[in-house]
Image 1 (spheres, rainbow, N blue to C red):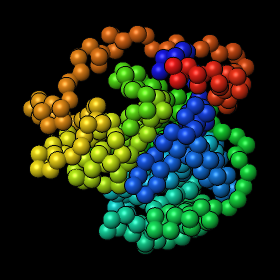
Image 2: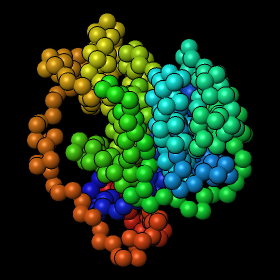
Image 3: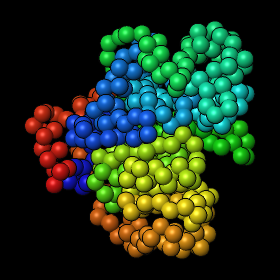
Length: 367
């Protein structure tokens, strides 16, 4: 891992995907029972989506609302938004219609991409009722919204066909431009939008992969939403540092998650403590082949000490030494490469300077 990152190179998230696809093109990035996308496929799909978004007028600094569950296309869509230089507004799919209107207005979305339905809800109909004209940008309550797109998981090709054909975006973002806006839970007031930059997210992803010493090709299974930092950063982006994959489930179900570990040979299980407890209870009443599992990441809430003891007993995993999770016990974070005045003024940097450089870096990754 450190060999591929001898010095910190600032870049955008879409540039990092291109870099990862150059090294891990044939490796899976998103795995589901219905579909598997390798790194090259996500790169190709995101390029097609970015051209369509650019044809709709999306560009650097525009905000694009993403109201999507953990579909494989959601990953490609996020990278497509970043490729255009726009900002992805990650919207909580548990919001009701009034909350949806609030975050769309508060974040200043120029475009909204929503799934048609999920579970018992029909988001397209709810939005039509609450914000008539949102699809064409004609809802007076959202003056910054120029239009919307609907993704129907039962007819996914229609989403791609609805996008206009266009050229690849001429201008992307810069590493310190906003990449994502996530909203707080709003438990003590109205939700607040938190802006995170490309470099911010990539540093967090690398730090997570480094301090946990993620193995090459880590395969993480979770039902945590990609609109949340746990799923997006720890799940997707950190795994990309080591050429790994995610196995994202659409909703939490203990049996489904444990079966996914068995079926897809996942190595890394993610969840909040209540999820972890429910999965341990399920594992006690039904047998699963969990021999591929090497780590469980249970976080985002206080975890009683007995949970860790039960994890060791139920899943056969031993706790890592405390020093392994301490920053002070690790080598220094990669030093930031010196930048010339001209490079600081540039709004975009290529991930690779040459084909030879790309081959050399990939070779280091394989050692």
